[in-house]
Image 1 (cartoon, rainbow, N blue to C red):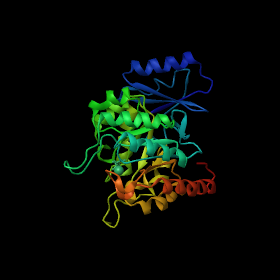
Image 2: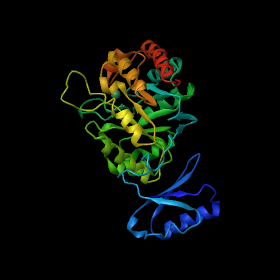
Image 3: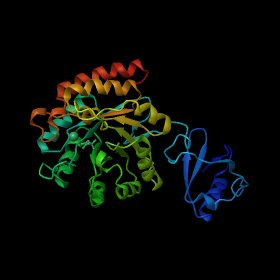
Image 4: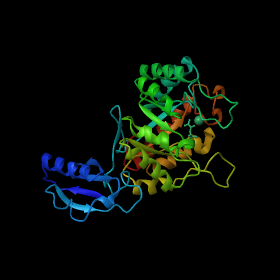
Amino acid sequence: MIVIVKPDATAAQLEQLLGRIRELGLTPMVSQGAERTVVGLIGDERLVSDGVLESLPAVEQVMPILKPYKLVSREFKKTDSIVEVRGIPFGGPEIQVIAGPCSVETAEQMRKAAEAVRAAGCRLMRGGAFKPRTSPYTFQGVGDEGLDFFREAADAYDLPIVTELMDVRKIDVFLEKKVDVIQIGTRNMQNFDLLKEVGRLNVPVILKRGMSATIKEWLMAAEYIAAHGNHRIIFAERGIRTFETQYRNVLDVTAIPVLKKETHLPVIVDPSHAGGKAALVAPLAKAAIAAGADGLLIESHPCPEEAWCDADQALSPEQLTQLMGELRRVAEAIGRTL
Ligand code: PEP
Ligand code: MN
């Protein structure tokens, strides 16, 4: 359930409400909106008998949340949430593009990649130091050292870094290297222990959709993160599995408006892993922006044919720059900026 707080409630009255909720054995989650404050109750709601909260001076209304996902739902918070990454807003009128290689390879490759990402006008950089590969015999990522290359290259161009976390044992290294956004990949969307641990951090999280996950399962995975205290979640649609084999995955464009209706959190799209081919990235990226996505996650490489991973889908620096120009016009057409 959620408690709507009276607009004129004092700080002391709000504290009294939070204290009462804790006494009942539940955890209060406060969401401070521009117009109103609401408090979500986490725990066994049967412990709250009728009228016990309504009688408090801070309380305007107590309402059940009917959806199984609560903190991430629009029922909990009507207005769009902005997730800021070092001052860069996700979820507002400005569309954010994150670009960079599939995997971190060398210091030189990351320097060139960062230069191209910045020159194209993207505001954040991606790159995996730990790669979830289908085969145990293929390149698994350069590991901890890669985070150093990445950090150095991105810092030189003032780009926050986005990188995938697969293992809870790497959280300390991620914090030490000051990873700006933790990516949870498609294969780990329902790794609930990983989600719980990421939920305890104060670091923004990109939660990719499981390749065979329903929208409800995806929202529930985000709820795991939020329920453990981290509300800085960005959803990323990256294509799903269907009967079609002509391309890597099917970009579920419909998921964008559906998710925007179900959640107050930002939604971005990864057209690279959806299409799996460089030539498909631009049309899918444009479709995503037109459908209301708040940002894009794009694979680019200083020299795509030499990429150690996902070479077929990487954009060259020139292709990335051209795409950014085209996307700017699509954004403008729907009243947004890029
Ligand atoms: C990636 O972004 O590098 C990646 C592995 O993506 P996904 O989890 O969507 O396959
Ligand atoms: Mn990739």
